[in-house]
Amino acid sequence: MPTLSDLVARHTALDEADLDWLHSLVSDWQLLADLSFADLILWAPLLGEGGWIAIAQMRPTTGPTVYHDDIVGSVAVKGERQLIDTAWEERRICREGDPDWSTGVPVREETIPVRRSVEGGEGRFLGVIQRSTNLSSARTPSRLELTYLQSASDLAQMVAEGRFPFSGEEPILVRSPRVGDGLLRLDRAGRVTYASPNALSAYRRLGLHADLVGAELGRVTATLCYSDEPINEDLMIVASGRAAKETEVESGGTIVQLRAIPLIVGGGRIGALVLIRDVTELRRRERELMTKDATIREIHHRVKNNLQTVAALLRLQARRLQVPEGREALEEAVRRVGSIAIVHETLSHAPEEFVDFDEIADRVIAMTGEVSAAEAAVTPKRVGGFGVLPSLIATPLAMALTELLQNAVQHGRPKRLEVVVEPALDRLKVTVWDDGRGLPAGFDLEGSTSLGLQIVRTLVEGELSGRLAIQPRLEGGTEVTLSIPLPAA
Image 1 (cartoon, rainbow, N blue to C red):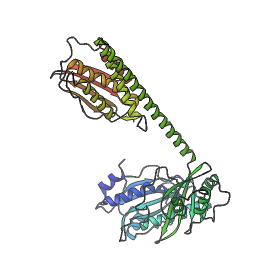
Image 2 (spheres, rainbow, N blue to C red; image 1 turned 90 degrees about the vertical axis):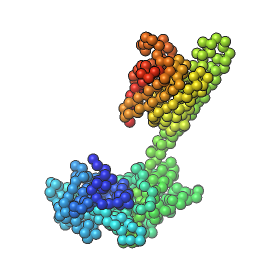
Image 3 (cartoon, rainbow, N blue to C red; image 1 turned 135 degrees about the horizontal axis):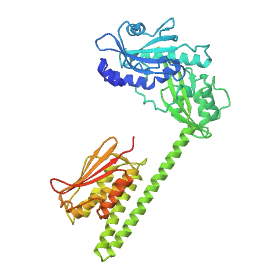
Image 4 (cartoon, rainbow, N blue to C red; image 1 turned 120 degrees about the vertical axis):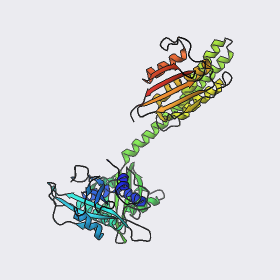
């Protein structure tokens, strides 16, 4: 399905500022759909054709939908949808008298012109919102439904006047309170004129024993949450409905999120909506996860320290040995332990069990270059990027890369040594090549007795479920290819 940006760019004359306004609108128009108990379709004027194209759609969570199929991308010629034409031409909200039965269910249609506020001007009209209400389950509305509908009418008027969405405000978070979480309606003075059952329950959990209706929300909330400490200024702004902002309050172990939507109609503030959500359990789980993450990072840090201690002990033992073969074996062990320590050090700074492997690869390559300085005077080079990899892949891959580079330096004595990375969606291809002596005559990977190659093969084929191939290069030297499957994103 094409995106809103694609449809606007291909089919309309709207500019970048218009598109930003529409993005802000559709990021928050679930509020209007839920308060209206209605489907919303955003229509934009087609470029030079005098018709309309549907560029966005929203279904309500508070009532039945009218459109079970997606409308986005549909085109309507001029005259086909009279209410849209009228709202656009007359710059006003249009309401149809009789329900439309063309879809098999009674539907009430309304259209709302979308205006973008322009500083120092009257604004710019960008399109029309079609609001369609399924009347098949219509009944005598409750106090809650009447409040919802009145609030929806006020919001629709704000859209038509270019006052919603709120320009210059921070973007609304995905986890912001929704209409069904809890709703308060305030008058101009910040007093509660209606409290939904969910909103009242949230305040009961904060410690409220009196009724909310008629109370000044800012003062009541401050009394509940800030009796022994300075009052949060954001709380008073949000709870009075004076600005479109969010805040959280905590009392008695309960955490409640508040979001204010000032209602500004006809140039004046007539009140506000305050959406409320009890986020106690959500914050508790987030704190638990943060604690677990910190514990995991500390474990990685301690493992890294222990590995470095082991490497230091092996290095000390190697210096005491008089047998060259024994000293060389311990030095190889030091490098292997060091490559694992590099991964754990990176993980100790990462918020999740994923690491930027480019940093690890560069450190492994640098370590190989330092060791090879006296033997071959070669500086390995990386071409391409590994990107972010899970730790289950990073640790064995770092060890395999260490072994391959070290083998190339020790046995090939190359002048050039490169690690070429070719990432794909589901597989990572890594090629390590050099221009050194090449493979010995009759080389067979299956029958090789080299400990380094046996380790690489075990890591690649056993732990990473990948494939390993070693072959001579036409230009001279050796080429080793690793093909490693990546987990689905």
